[in-house]
Length: 86
Image: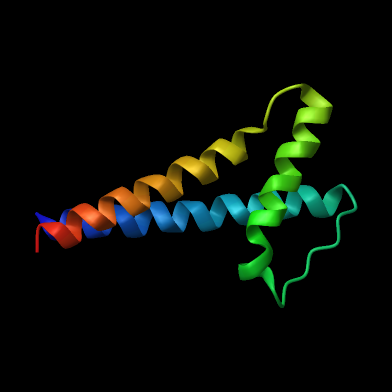
């Protein structure tokens, strides 16, 4: 049973990475300079910028913002459940 939760945690983390890549692509098209060397450190900054820009353009956060937040939270919950069941 714990293997199932660990697998779900990994899938959630992978989806979070995909979301962050799409977010940085969106920002790059809008003229924001993306620092690939420090991407892991700056990813939360980029997500905040995406949230701010989409709020200004559409009046609500873009769908990839929620995709990132939900996937990372699910990855955390599944990882904790998988470790607890070991």
